[in-house]
Amino acid sequence: MASADDIRSTVSKYLDAVGGGTSADVAALYADDATLEDPVGTEPLVGREAIEKFYSALDAVQNKTELLSIRVAGNSAAFAFRVVTDTGEQTITIEPIDVMTFDDQARITSMRAFWSQDDISFG
Image 1: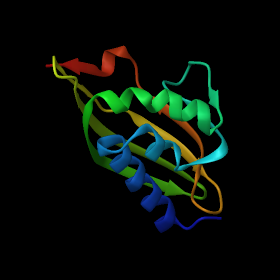
Image 2: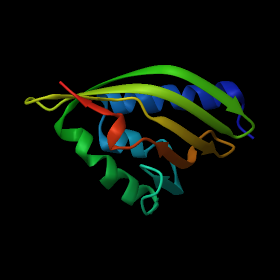
Image 3: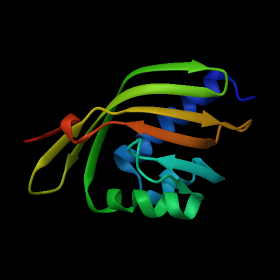
């Protein structure tokens, strides 16, 4: 099992990649057969290729991320964070709570994002 420090490091790399990296940078943090459900209640995506395609929207916008809190237990982490997206025409802010599981190398094996349209603010 990955250590709590390794899991925290992967979460930090995830937030850095969402905040300033590419879809490929984010997808590289996932295991090959990982699942992604964002937001919870939507059809889960399976596999790194599908996950990279999901994150491709990041490639066209400027994001800033900030970790608000994190809890690590066993091979899982739950964390709240803020992401501010500048589309050039407007600013979008959301504070999701993500729950992830990790393999022995601290790669993400599943991600479930808890948020709804009610959690988005526009500026």
